[in-house]
Image (cartoon, rainbow, N blue to C red):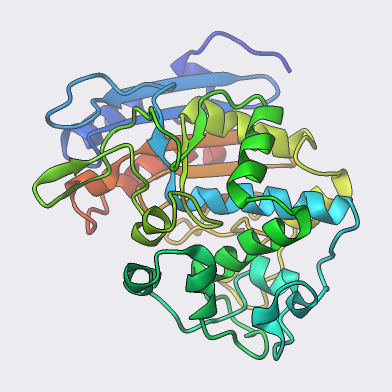
Length: 338
């Protein structure tokens, strides 16, 4: 892949002054953006770690990327497909006893059709701070819903599926894949020595270097749905690995980038969303995933484009929605470049 020196005009439509302004207005204490295509490469960063930690945020700053962890779990499951250990239409009851009275398939979980009434998991995890014990307390649906129903529980079970078929801990499987992909700026929440911007103020103190998601933090720091820390540079590399078939075979990757949704607004690949709320103008060629703390990873497999943004928007409160304007400024390039 040809890589040019980072320049703002490499990706038409990117308004870095607007992104600086959004950071100054409280979209997030800081943010980092890294984008690439077969011909272009672009980096941008703005702001600081936090109001009290004035170190500048940058493309190599580690952020808690929250639910983007689900894409790493998806990657591990797709590798199980390639090895013939499971398949899209296999029933989860073949592998986990929790599903003995359920017809749910692996695909149902990957496409958020399981609809388990169990949120928020954090309340249950306070009483049961162990991922397997937590799983025992989640009522499993007997069959899939025709509608998209986003929740963490489905990826909790997919993490357990990886453990069952690998015979190793989910954390070990993650670390092995991270190392294989050369993601040197990607860590998991159970590791020591993290140096990441705080994601929130809890009890008057900055919550930093610990998984933001409460249930994942209580259950050891990483689960199938949260616990990855990564830089914007590494998120871009991770997205590029999908497009270069380093995650899975072309067949499995093609399945991931297929829309399985049955209704408008519920477009969904395997793990990846094929829609982004309040961005109806985006091409259906774009697949993406966001995280509660503010990150976004988006790819256009047909055009070979990858967009990665990291931030810690929850530092200014969980109701802070201004960060979505940062996404809009990044994705403006996708609307501009043909």
